[in-house]
Length: 293
Image (cartoon, rainbow, N blue to C red):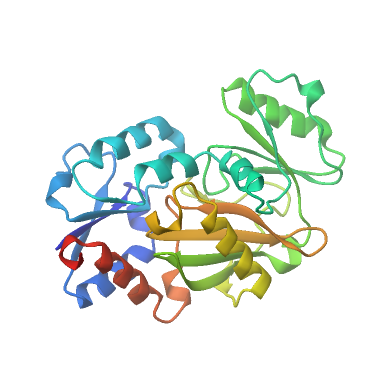
């Protein structure tokens, strides 16, 4: 058995989960190796399973990434599968969660061609970001008095053919941070706390791929756990298709948890922050291999 851990050329050096996962798989007698999603020399059919791990540059070439997934899926079992990747790589999926009754951070989507005079900005600080993005790229926090700058950011995104997202800055993030809950094969594994990223001013980026993060272990509140479970159940096609999932939740202004993002494509899973997490992930992968069926 050999497993491809799908990544990109830069992320392959930065993804701290891959070495831990490879060690855990090796303990189970399963070989694995990183494979670059955009490397035409990769013979995908020689793998028994391809696990999408850290193609963190996908947002720059989403169409090419999705074409790759569609092309590879007939050659090797891909986890998570192409339909999930297509749904999850555009954050308009948040509207689907809301329609299913899952509380989300209040979000307005502004599509190309929208007149800015029709855009209502929330009171207080505002977050503007593209619907197709990752790692806080092109994400900015604008202060309450910065309406013109916020609108200029929206204009830049939609003039570039991108959908913009407008959200109020939820101030509880400054103290509580985000809670990221990790699931393998639909089963809760562990959680971490992410400290606030948008403190005002430029976001510190790591090699242009993702914002620097302050990570620590966390025991989620029961309400956060229930919310994450509801979000998983709302994924089109159901949670059974998900090898891995990360649900990021934050408190709203009333302290009630809401979904900020749902990471089903290339999330860091923070294996070093929970005893046994790498082994749990490796066990989930082993259960997907053909020999296990």
